[in-house]
Amino acid sequence: MSVTWATIIVAAGSGQRFGSEMLKQYAPLCGKSVLSYSLETFTKYGPVALVVNPAHAPYFPVFASGVSVVEGGATRQESVRNGLAFLSKFAPANVMIHDAARPLVTTDSITRIKTAIEDGQKAATLALPVADTLMRGSETVDRTGVMAVQTPQAFNFSVIAAAHVKAAGKSYTDDASLVRVEMGVDCTFIEGDAENFKITTQSDLKRAEKIMSSQLTETRVGMGYDVHPFGEAPEDGTIKLFGTAIPSDHKLVGHSDADAGLHAIADAILGTIGAGDIGLHFPPSDPQWRGMDSADIVKKSLELLAVKGGSLVNVDCTLLAEMPRIGPHREAISKRLSDILGLPADAIGLKATTTEKLGYIGRGEGLAVQAIVTVRLKR
Image (cartoon, rainbow, N blue to C red; front, side, top):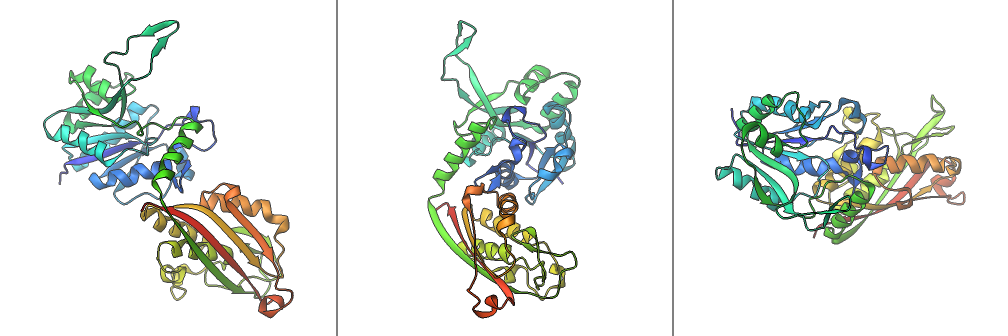
């Protein structure tokens, strides 16, 4: 079986200039990882080889359908070669090669570069003329004809595959240069987009956030509410609440881990996109969900929001309970929610109150959590 197009997404780099323990390709950007945007974009065009460093596995997002993970090499050139070797089983006529740290590439840009190859060019790259004055030391560099190269770059598959075989042991920073030198094939420049920049620094990430946020013009609010009764003493002396182990004399009873905090948050997110409630997606009658980590329930709700093109902006939670007291654990809860939701701490509200000894909560028979979330979506 052969395909017309395949894509290599290069994501094995360490991003040393990003200035964070979090690798730039996995950094949160409007509710999803930077890498997720490229995955969702390029799976529309055929099989995708995502080239990664296996050591980065803890950061991997949920991969889109049609994505295969390929082990990267010590250099970008080696990583691309590994991706080409993997994709050869699909016998693609053409291939695009894209940097994972360019999440803002547009469909129009991809269409332009694909058309160039389909019209007979063997190599093409997105590029923009350099507008700024260039200096080398005190000397001004003539910028006539100077182009800033972007990705994706697109190639006839047999040409780029042969070029990488010839380039073994050499060092190239991009594939357009590699093909020109090794195969004598000039790369056609296709008009790029100023917003298709590569995220290299923290300021680049903030710039991308501003651009993406400006595209999300519809604001929606969702509310979730969940209740769980108390049962006998928990075996380890703790319960799960907001994804955090909290000391308690009584366990929470439920089909999953009975984390009322995360259940309320998940229901609130689902409510913003009309996707029902968690019982619809994780029915308590199904034994496969027994004892499941409720963080996975929230993860599913965020995935459904992302499919709709939405981004989580804020979460505000209120715990109604006589026990346990969450004050001593506020910092741990806030950090855990930040990790689960991909939100900064100041976008997460966490409050607790009692019912002044009234009702089932006042009698200590159970607890409840109310959550309100704000999301933004493209209109």
